[in-house]
Length: 483
Length: 100
Image 1 (cartoon, chains in turn green, yellow):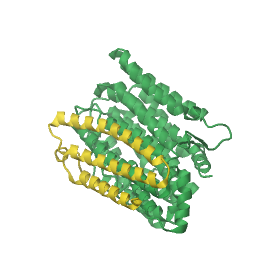
Image 2 (cartoon, rainbow over the protein chains, first blue to last red):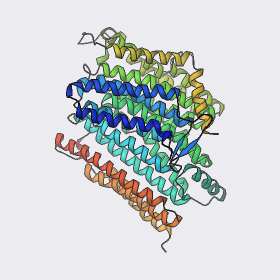
Image 3 (cartoon, each protein chain N blue to C red):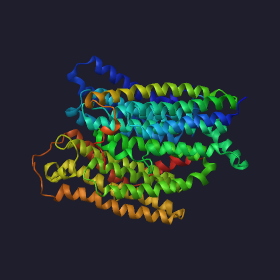
Image 4 (tube, one colour):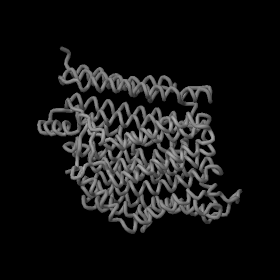
């Protein structure tokens, strides 16, 4: 077994353990410094992984651990994505937990463990490693969602996520069992071979049923309609950094997994899963955008917005082309940057506005120009206003769909995008133009937060104006994966 | 030997009972038992399929499932206990503050 291929997972897991031990040994007063150090180290890991991906020179697919673990450019991309997402949410937690947390370092360590789960998910080449990695991620999320055990809303969100998450894992597992019963394989390559024979002889119904159950389980993780009910409730109740990690990391891991399962193992069944993806995509876009229209709570609104963005990304997957899949990866990066800005701004205002009521955002433009600017750029990018990253994400996905002549779905997606303008911009209007406000006191933003906001805003603008490096990275990941 | 279809039918019955329990029951602990039933339905199918496919992968998978289920129960019961301490109830219908 080649441990050097798993170096990023091992390093992040080591960091999580070191953080827990440091929390036990060091005095209470140094907790914030320890958390800051762990965040910085993970940031260094992320930058290091950009320079040295861990994939040997010239190799494009390395298998290890008896075929359970694969390292290819898509897996490397997924690991970088998870690390970046976790660095950002850990940074938010540092601000958030100053005020709210009793066990700050445990909260950070659990995020690191969830990050290990997401990184392993990106490397799954077998249903066994897929299931264990997904559970590592999900079980950490159960704790992260219900972390504030004195807060009734938080615990309620925890219970809901626990029941829905465990149900989805159970459905996924039963699907895996049926697939195994019909193909006697857990590895994606073996299943692909068997499914070719099954489709040729056309005599097996267990495999399609198993595939449907696996897809249902994955749809829970990416919160696509009809498995989306948990999303708004859990986002609203969960601590804000958890909601951020759930919306970025869990969705990213879910989409990488979806791409792997559908294109590596079940490509022969595309006539079966393609219509399902198309319906789920259209329904998610419609439902997410329409339900978000009437929301008065920003976290809940982000929950519905997350459902609609899943719909756009599913549209890219349903295009079943290099272009569509690369567009999904590009879209995920744009989504990461924009969501990190929005949730980061929410963490800044959490002390004044713990429930994240949108009316409380009135006058934020004057009270805290930095948080307001972050929220503005994030929301504009999510709604797809031209020069920003979100616009090009949507453009790429729509043109991929156009190439496949999916005009109906394209119409729905465009209508949804127009609809989304309304609710994103109404938050912006409240923030800058609404006069009604009880408190006028300024909300301070620390220097480090200003730096992070500046970098993220620059990232959103750069990814919009100067797309080619980001696009090439996504395309390289997809091309070598599906060689 | 009992054919594989019979095992699949029994396990799918267990699976259906589990899903029905999750949807219909109102007590968080009973819901949690139903979730365990779903995992065990999968274990039964995995082990039976392993026997009929002639390789041990399914049985190995079943061990991993048991371990994962134990981790899930540990976390899940902790959340339910914390909820009981706060609200003195484990009825799912009593924790519905978050809704549309």
